[in-house]
Length: 290
Figure 1: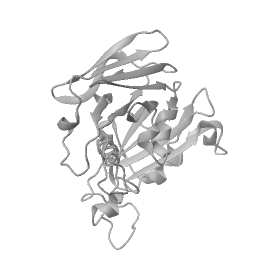
Figure 2: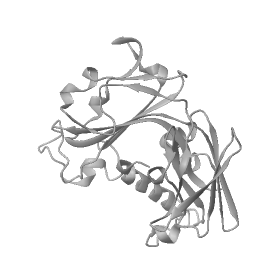
Figure 3: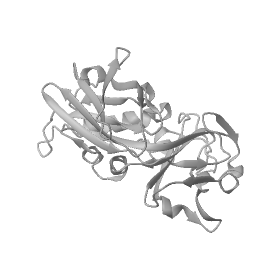
């Protein structure tokens, strides 16, 4: 998990919690389910930043505490199906419920199976990590770009190279500013700054604060760059001045289904529980838009 996605992470988690309980007689009764939320990053270690959250659903009418939702003595393992190697994942007293193993490097084009055993229940999920996605651009990674929106886009395109034209590509732009400080680049109304959180993200971490796009790799062909797969329109996804982060990722089917289907908690590849266990390959780009 990237730090910039913490709020997205929490919103997704709260969705998983809220759908599990409804006191309305016409709604479903509360069911205690093991939830999984996490995805593997190709070429990177399964460290604390990419930890997999294992928890229980909680009744929506009770005050929520993550500590109360963590299974006790959960046994969490990850199996590399190509070698048969099984690695133990552990959480820590500082971050209960977030399971990882620093020694494990995630390999592209490899199938991994997650197994969670808790309170006599077993939950499994499998993902096939996307092939390596080569990204070429003048934009900096692991550093802050101080930019003007007008000098982005077609002036600093992002060129992708991959092995599968049908690979799903995910472009995600997220404003890191608080709604009190967020200032619109283009005037949406009588004031440049957001007047409230709903105007900033509709109260659901949604547009215009968080803008997403999905496409197949083949759909990134353009007459501007013959023979290339290019993302040059990302500048139109930058709505606010200040700190913004863009991710360009190749994503697996589980994560794709979780992001776009109507019932994401049931579509993320988790068997015996709910949530998502997926995998991605790509880069982050941080902008300080002046």
